[in-house]
Amino acid sequence: METHGSIVAQEWIEERFNRKHIDARIKKEIEESPFMMEKHKQGVGLIQAMQAESFYDSKDKRIAQLKSLDLDALVMDIFVGVAYSVYPDLFTSVSAQMAARLKFNDKAEAISMVADLLALLCQTDAFDITKKNKRASLMLVSKIPLSDELLEFIANSQYLPPMVCEPLPLTHNYSSGYLTHNDSLLLGQGNHHDGDICLDVLNTMNAVALKLDTKFLSTVEEEPTFELDTPDKVDQWTAFKKHSYAFYSLLVKQGNEFYLTHKVDKRGRIYASGYHINTQGTPFKKAMLELLHEELVEGVPT
Image (cartoon, rainbow, N blue to C red; front, side):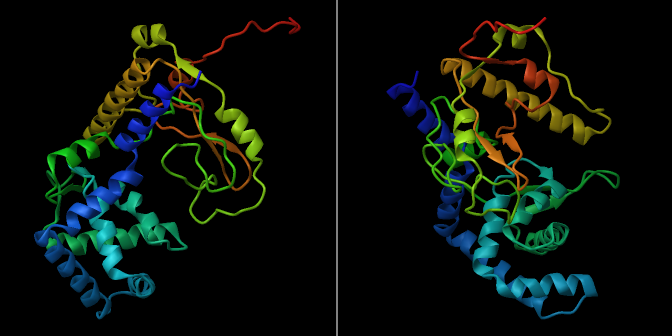
């Protein structure tokens, strides 16, 4: 049952884990730092100089698309995104995550352009791009000076866990169910619209209370569903597993009652939102979830 305590706890969780709030805090600290604003100015100059040059055909076409963008805002967006890499992250992963900020029609082009921009802006010394050896993957790590408090928030800002109070009713296509932010209910860049997406169905699914099977979690080890055949994969799996168990512990401490929110794709298919906890995840992820309000199913033919 929803209580004032669960609402307060949910607001605290969103402030702690939601990058929509943390982005603004990172941007504020960068803007208040004369040191970083000088690097920002340098970054804008580097992009302007790149726009004045000619490379090969495909790169020239990508660079031409930057003319419609605000370079001040673009460099700030990249610096904000880079700031999350407190520890070395795969360069390819960072490029893919930032690609949506460019809003190119072609996703592959956007990723390539972000990779070019990161390689260029690395000259500002706001971050490093390195590799351990010739065969290792490129890694990116931020050098942006941030407060200890903000670094702690960044460390926690992986993915929003499920809600510990019942989600707010969805009343339009740009609502999330969360208490402190809204978001498009349509998955995929550029797919948002204001047409009918059956909000009543999403509200019904959002209102289903769940719990973790703590006995299962304490007796069955979560194993990867892929081969750990490279150091990068080992590191990624270790981090994912660590964060997963941290979220399991958080939800149990908050009473082990929670709700998943849902979105639709452009074909109307419904997907649960959640990375570490999801009803549509791996067999382990599915097995650890139960309905909070259990009932015996009767009248089913045997």
